[in-house]
Length: 453
Image 1 (cartoon, one colour):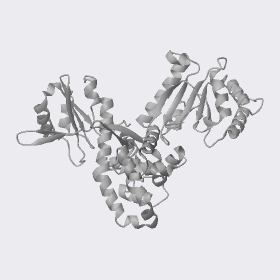
Image 2 (tube, helix red, strand yellow):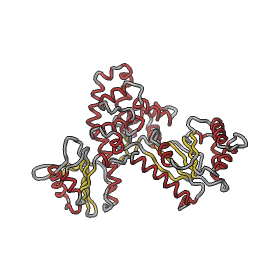
Image 3 (spheres, one colour):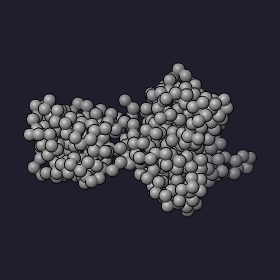
C-alpha cells in the first residue's frame, strides 16, 4: 500500500477513534467526516481500506436519482432485516436509524448530485439534526468542486490527492528516475491513466499507443469537465488558452474572444474544481493549470484532435510534442514536485517568512573562476536556505558537485547558519550521504518526493 494512501487511511481511522471516544469536536453528534478529492483520486478506496476491519454500511448514489435511491436503500435495509414502513425518505432514514443500533459506521458515496433533490436533502438534514437518533460515524464522500448545498452539516475534512512521484516509484521499481518523472508528468499522477502505461514498453511507445486509442489518457479530460459542467467545451477553450501561456484575464479574453467578466467567471469556477490556481507574479495575478496532465493535454492534444483522428499527427507532430514535453514540461513538473516536498519537510528552525518564499526562483552566485546557479537562495533572521535540483540522471551527485555548491553557498552565508537541500533522480554518493549526517545538507531522491498540491 502506497504511503500517501496509507496516511489518508490512518487519518480516517484516527477520526473514527476520536469519534467513538467523543473527544474534542467529535462530541457533537451532528459532525460528519467529509472525504473530498479530485475525480478518480482514490477517495472510496481510502475510506473502505481505512475502515476495512470495522462493520459498516456503504451506499453509493452514483447515477442514482431520488426515486431510485429510495428503492435501492429500501431493498438494502430489507436484506439486513430492517423493514421501513414504506419507501419514502423519512421512512428510509428511520430504517437507517434502526440499523445504527448494530452498524455504527455509515458511508454515503457520490452525494454530489442527489443533494440537489429537495426531498432527499430535507430528509437527510432532518435525520442529521435529530438529537434523538442513534449515534453513528457518518462518512460522506464528495468530489472537489461540487457543492453539498443545500445541506448544512458540520464536517471535518480529509483530502485525497493524486499519486506522488514516490508512490509511483514504489509501484514501478524497474523504471529509471527519468522515466518515472516523465510518467508522472504525462499522467499527472492520476491512477486511472497510470494504469494504462505498460512497464515493458518505453514511455514513448506507451504514449503513442494511448493517443491512437480510446484510452483514459484521451478521454479523462472530457470525463472530468462533463462531470462538472453542462457545456464543457467552453471551459476546454479557457484551459487551452491557459495551457498556451495566456495567464492573465485580459490575455485569456483576447485569445478566446470571450468578455473579460465571463473569463473571470469561468476561471473562478475552474479554480473551485481544482484544475486552476491563482499565483501572484510581479504584483499581478496570473492563472495556471495545476495538473501537468491537463496542461499537456490542452497544449498538445486539444488543438490536434483532427490530426490524431486521421493519423496525420504521428507523421511529425508527435515527435515535436514529445521533445517539447521532455525539454519543458518534465523539468517543470519535477521542480514543482521538489518544492512541494520541501515546503512540507523544511527545517523548523527557519522563519515563517523564509519558509513562505520557498518557490522556484533561480539565483546565480558569481565566484572568481565560476558561476553557480541555485534553484532558490534566500535568507532571513540569520538563517539561509539553498536549493539545488539535479535533473540529469546520468550525473552522480558526489564530492565534486557538492564542493562547487558549498563554495557558492559559503560565498553568501556561513555554512553553520545554512540549510542546503539537494534533489536528484538517483541515489547520492557515499561521500554526500556522509556529509548529510552533519545536518547542514538534506538529500532528497525520488523516494522522498511524497507530497503534491
